[in-house]
Amino acid sequence: MRVCDLIERKSPFISLEFFPPKEKEAWPGFFDVVEEVKVLDPLFASVTYGAGGGTQDNTLEIAVRMKRDHGIEPITHLTSVGATAEKLDGFLNSLREGNIKNVLALRGDPPRGVENFDFNSQEFKHATDVIEYIGKHYPELCVGGAAYPEPHFESPSIKSDLEMVHLKVQKGAQFLVTQLFFDNRLYFDYVERLKEMGSDVPVIPGILPIMSLKSAKFILGLCGAAIPGKFLSALEKAHEEGGDDAVYELGIDFATKQSQQLIDGGAPGVHLYTLNRAKAVLEIGQNLKI
Image 1 (cartoon, rainbow, N blue to C red):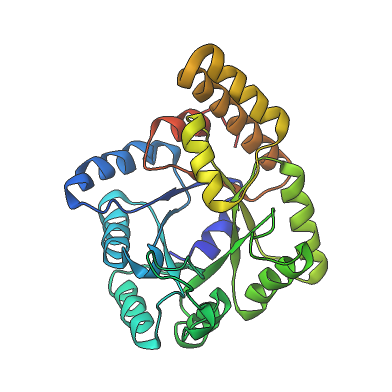
Image 2: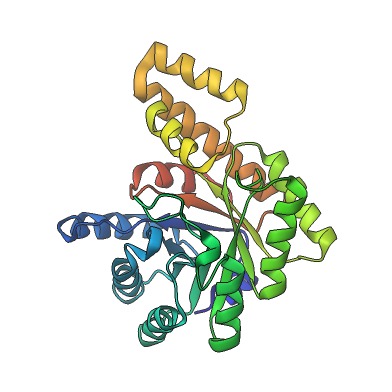
């Protein structure tokens, strides 16, 4: 089914994000996790897409199996990096064949190992180009875009970042999923600003459960999000006194309270980054009042 329609029917909700394991030997364990989290009744699960389309085939196959074998509605990520009309058509027609009706259109990161990569040299330069192409040639699909309560690190200003996300909606994005963040005030202010610009589509907040201090700093370094100083100090103190177990406990408690406050404040749902693990999202999801 189209996620756009599912959101209208059920809110608030929990949704999940997975990344395709590169080695197929890891797939049985991956699908064990998918089956385990079904108890949360996720509205959908997104499946990421490697830089330059590096895991395109895995993304497609995992999404098909997720829907066919596990009964979870998938959203496939799709990046503009390295895309051509021919490649997009091939992927999108494969979605049709797999009865998958949802895409999250992203620009994506530069391919690894390519110095001075020029996005302007691409046939599809921005996520907006992919969104527009899908709307024109595959109108049956529900297409979403990414949003950044903390501006994208390449954006020259908050205003320009908002204008780019607003353009995604103008080009046909029917929902938005945010990058991870830890201050809910950023989310609610962001949603309000988008509405004032005329972009009144569901904005689903992305939540990352912090499971260890090392992994948190690595992930945050990649995406540019910031941990509020008080929370970071608490995490560092927990690590000094109780190690990773104490950090995990504090991180899950924070993510649960953050998610509940977002839902209570009117967010359509919460999108939990699973990191392909079940335990943390199960602890969060089963403690939410939805």
